[in-house]
Length: 486
Image 1 (cartoon, rainbow, N blue to C red):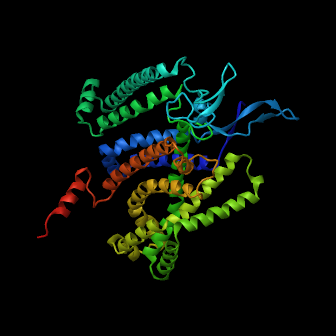
Image 2: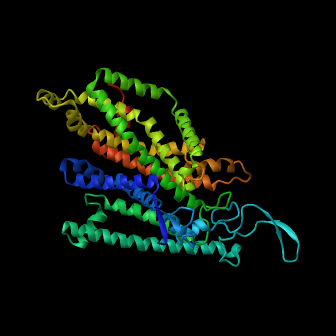
Image 3: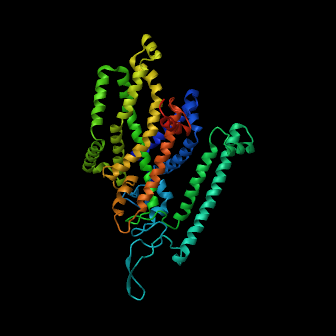
């Protein structure tokens, strides 16, 4: 076997979560009352545009969650194959040029010369201080000063052409698929998509996809010969670092939510339904937990886990496995310290639902408390759970960045938005400043958080009966607030 599969803890949990999501989608499609709010989400233009961006991030994260160790040419004493100590992912394989082409130190975006001067010995034996050529970027240019801009322009135009071709091909496939599902002609379907008359906002989604391709394809064309976002202190490509950071953000946002749910659901429903001493104890627990500064609690827990891992190095075969366990422990710690808000919401809603007619009827028929909580209360609380999950995702991504910035986040060997920002902290103090690492991390994190927030808003508008869908709601609120009192 040319490789040895490596199943990290977070990889397994990510794919379990993915399978659960697929099962959830299949079950929702079979129930009309569950499908109705999701149809509202599907009719939201900004929600579906955000979903297109999120799917792109998700694809990168899933490719980075398939890990393996490559087989070496040598064999051990018993004739078995040896495998490399370094764990790679499918994303590493696809981004091999970005990963392997490391420079000596800093270089600016799309530069062909190093960012710092070096002492260079010339052919005649004399030495001088000048900016040396980079090892990998722009090596195909014989005269970089004259050819660089024309080469960059040519590659950008090639990327735009590739983006246009891919967009047209995808649009044709989408139109064909929609026409087959609706038993309509291809021309009629295309006309409806262009006019925006279809139920799902395909026009907005295709425009978003086109804009993404217009960015991604030129970047791919340029990354073949240049460092698009420059390099860091050790010469590693910043674009590669940002791509690797996506998985860390997705893992933090999704797995932490998975850990929050059991605590919040069980304790919130029990507190609201049972009331009495159960409610008092649960309120005491989450009030006490809320009174402790979250950053201090997380820092103490992370340091304890770090000490435990240092004392048991035999449990981790590679550095990647060790960093992965620390990432998983960070998700657990964030989950344990983040369940109180959702628990309080579920308690309040359960207090209201326990007085409902159908719950009182269940009591009169002798239904047990456990069955009432599971069969009657829990399904009616799921819209709050779903809204909370999608709205907390962006907060958890930002929390990881903050914790890594203060040194209690993910393992330093793991690339994340927080570690990139932390490393860029001192680079900004240089003269001249190295700004591109911070800018790249900020742009990718901003896109991820913005798309997650927009999608969360559309989910909230669809599932919360007190909200109305559409962009006009904020304006109505502003008008209501600005109106003079009667």
